[in-house]
Length: 409
Image (cartoon, rainbow, N blue to C red; front, side, top):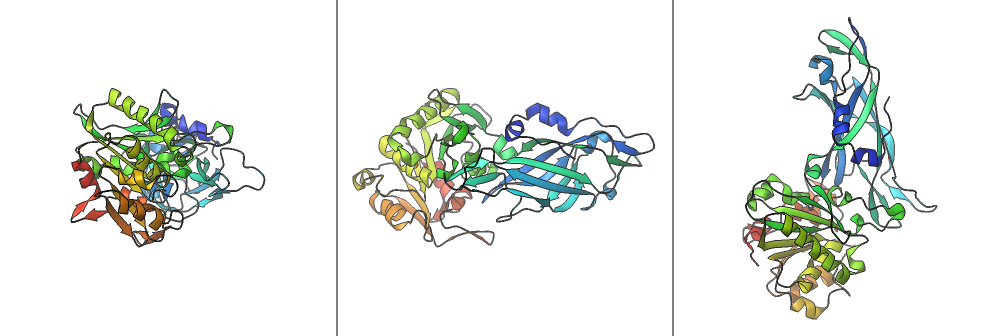
């Protein structure tokens, strides 16, 4: 059995949850039951969002586990995911689940802990960490409750052992966890990744889509979904991107509602966050870059109209333009701009938005895809940020990230 942990408990896990993973447990002499073992949920952000891809059982403290006794049937995994906030009558939250997670492999890691790899993949129900509230168009962190059942003994130091109790610990995602938590003086939350070293590095500002803002009941403002809903920000912190930029800071503000609600009001709040990062980190002031998707695509364009000399480059992805940014404002943009969209985007049709902006912004570049396909899986046409997060857009042999890395204000 396992103990239910709330979303807040998972977020606050830290050292305490890590200790739960390696909780000392003793097998009775001659074999029998171990008192308890903690476990960790291991997550990755796929192109379509974050999923729990494996469970790590802290069995290393029991002693050396014989790997020959580990099969896909040794343990079973059940997962339950529920909304962290009440859902009003008549409303709906998508991606809740209560089901068994198939174990596809069982192995030992370098610490001697048991890793249960779980079936997962794009479009697969039952592994996601986020739910989408229909009426509010917002993603929220789901409360995850996992139950581990041992179906056969494992052999530890030559003796069969059955664990009496499993204790759930934290959700671990190294890519997401590399971004620190911050709040600006004005109260806007943000996440920040900084590379090692003292040299001045470029700063990439990633502005999220509408589903990752706040404006929810119970004061829900989590500073989490901006990194877990897609790879837009994470892409710039990958080893590949960091090599291209020779190291780059990546800052991810979270709107208190949604950017298009009031772009002129949010612009100075984002500028304040940039100033804070410039003050606290070694930032190359001539290489501040802004990018964003959907709502954030609009906001990245808006920032270049409000602060025409601040940014070295702008990358608006499937951004909203119609009725929000005037033609005169677009014609006056002087920031080097590379726009990205997909022709089959029915949420923000590209012709009156991305294509129209490209036609008016002097010298702008455009990557217009027919659809959004990654590793054979077709995503909704609006999700063209997937291409940006994978450095796919290219022109004349130069890919997007390389182009961004070369720009100077």
